[in-house]
Length: 300
Ligand SMILES: Cc1cc2nc3c(=O)[nH]c(=O)nc-3n(C[C@H](O)[C@H](O)[C@H](O)COP(=O)(O)O)c2cc1C
Image 1 (cartoon, rainbow, N blue to C red):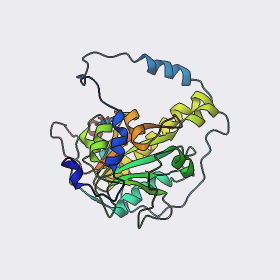
Image 2 (cartoon, rainbow, N blue to C red; image 1 turned 120 degrees about the vertical axis):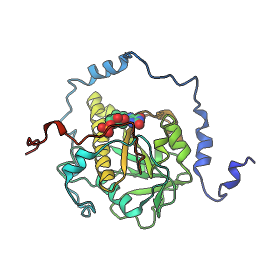
Image 3 (cartoon, protein in one colour; image 1 turned 90 degrees about the horizontal axis):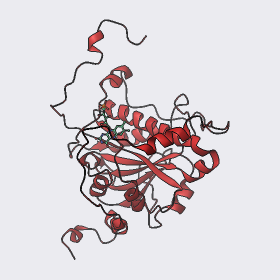
Image 4 (spheres, rainbow, N blue to C red; image 1 turned 90 degrees about the vertical axis):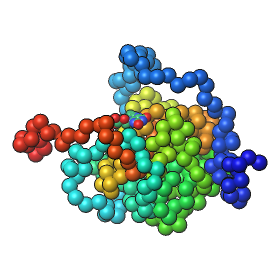
């Protein structure tokens, strides 16, 4: 038995055992350095042509209606939050958040107020929890719609699907597998430390095959809009409690799908995100927002 494995609790279905299953995905070749010139990606233009003008049918965007949530613990001026929001370029690897803050953050992306709830929810969150006080580190699932049974049937049969003690009833949060998820989160996110050094990171797992078959190409950009909305809310919620977030568009979807045991196109991961205590990068210049037009009214 190697050194690493001796530290793993023998009774739990750890992330490590899932990693064993995901080992089929290997990295090949060297990582390229950034190009000096613009690189053409013809697939993006093709997708644009296919989705442009694809009109959704009338039953397409049905929001679930107004939902009740606890008042946010965040108070204060949202304009200042919006203006000071920046992406973290590095996380400190030590900051912990408490479970109440974490649950409030999940409620804010799960129980949207009606004016933000533009679409029926088709995106669920697979969370890599690293440093949340009161929650065991590991892999979790936040189900944002009523599709838990379908998810269970499609994903790794060994997942536990247990509710964490103290989780609010309104949140459909489940522990899938306990364990140290930092290495796999980093690896999936193109070896970016920010996925491992925060309080948690997550992959946004969208319903994919069925909606595409039912509604065609029109669904594709809308799934991204839903991910973008989740990301923007997480950015502001993190900022409001003196943490920071970063949207992560560079990730290996095959490796992520392998980890969760997904082997068809029923679901698709579209975006990752990380939240944690950030490290200031003193190479970045910060100026007050709109400093060049101070004195003029910007938002009435
Ligand atoms: C679609 C998208 C993908 C991104 N992917 C990454 C990423 O893989 N890694 C990363 O560190 N930041 C990523 N970012 C964050 C950007 O680096 C960041 O938003 C950008 O530098 C602008 O900084 P700001 O958010 O502070 O305005 C991504 C942002 C977006 C919108």
